Image (cartoon, rainbow, N blue to C red; front, side, top):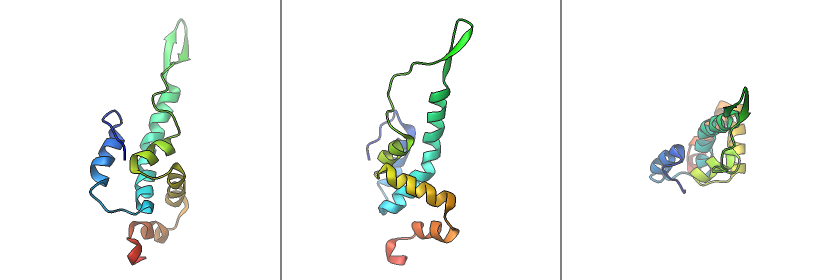
Length: 109
């Protein structure tokens, strides 16, 4: 997991996740829950505007955070963006039993 203090969510995740023995599925579920923060940051960047004359124009920000929010959060927790998509789908459409099963260690499933 690569995290810097410039990405506070990734930094907090890295401080906490390195102490745990989580499966890739469990990491993806953590990432899917954190994805909401990354999605909100992306929306804020997209809607950023500045005043130019009498009209508002999009701010020309540097490409600091390239990639989709799924890929950014995947990198933060150490799984692929595709795993984050699958975990997000489970959280939105999965049954409570399925969501609960992803929290238990594989030996208990």
